[in-house]
Image (cartoon, rainbow, N blue to C red; front, side, top):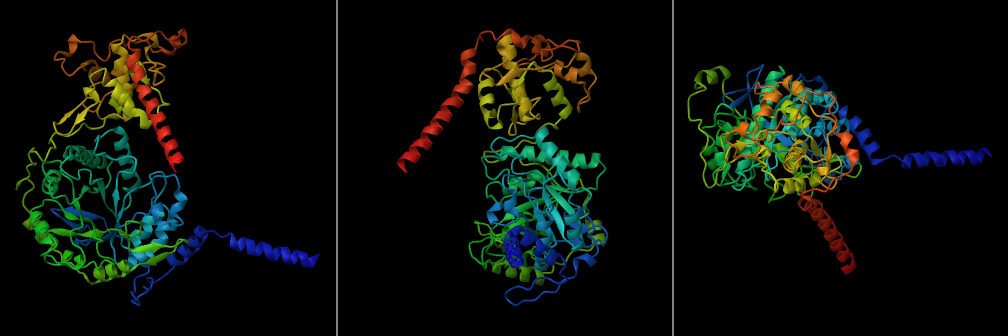
Length: 594
């Protein structure tokens, strides 16, 4: 019996050992790496000593003076030697795979990731990383403190995969602004936050330049929010692509006028393999940006037409040929993915395996030493802020971005509007179906109050509201146009009557960003763009009372009356139905044919 128990215990021990997951292995190795006092030894035999990160002094906040970055304490000019640092499930990272179903993998939140990668990033010689998606729900203290102690700054994108300025249908609204503010709130206290990107390649060719005003308004409002909250003056900028038709106008647009970006990045992939400053296009780009009023740098670089990448452009970027204009750059990217831009591979156990690109970039960064300007002398030479040409580019057949920017996203105004609606979009309607709601409603009424035109510089009163509020607004307008009949707020299940309406006194007690009360603002809104005299038409507030207990659900049990425009309303769900049937038929035929 004792012998049998010994066999059982031995079997259990083996089973437990076998049950250790790749993530647990990665965690163990992360702990070991975090305790390292020297950088990992590259497989090519190169040995690079680095300082124990726990013994380093913290990074000083970076400030902008003119078109250059400076350490706010030492006053030394700062050049970015960085890399894009954004894991994804495409890397087959044992840790990243655990984020199945989530849109954000934040490496500066998950200590399993940031601590595992820190020694490799430090050994690479970087002083800056770029993180493209921040999870704002939890504390980032541990990762940011460790990276600050290692002398590494962070550039963070304010958007996230499901919430950004969409170049095809651009908008700057309360939902997106809330996202941007939440990132600022989550990261503002960390001294090694170098800055925020308000957009990345939103305008990427001449067909969508009308999206740029929405990004510029995002920069304007984010900067103002940082100021209002009393936070440290953290720079807010933009990252552009290198499109031949638009790059000049884009750079001018984001640096012109009083509402300019704080910095400008360009994702630069012109230098491939063993090129040169004179043959790669770098000479021409440097000439184009030599009069920039704000810092410019490569927000991404690293053409991969030749693998392994030699990264010979680094020598030019930090040489006297470019440092008067450019403030360094960030290589793209840390993790190897199917697109083959990575410098490290992550194995099935979550361990880091440096690639040849890693060693080449490491050598390039370590041998490059940019010579900066003297802080005091540079300040003396600076022109006054008002001098120089800061005019925005004019409209043309290529450039169609107005100087008139979208409205400040006013949540109070939008909430007041929503509280005044008799008929609202049902919360059961999926966001993917919202486009059909607009297609139907805007075929029945004038949707100018929710429209936004970045080329004409015209923005409706509620164009800054959330997409749900805008959909509710147009459905309510259709409901009113059809006579506000008892059964009219259904639209085949798309809409529902509000439980109660805001009263005149309630709306009069709230003030929006323009200084008006909600009631004053809503009371002057015309129903169509052609209405020259708002008081001659039925206004938005018609029908409101001072009865605080007004309840519209009391009539919902009386049964639905026949809708006068039932055929038009039915069109919305008929379209969805036939699209769904068509999709099923296609799938069925595909299965049958296979």
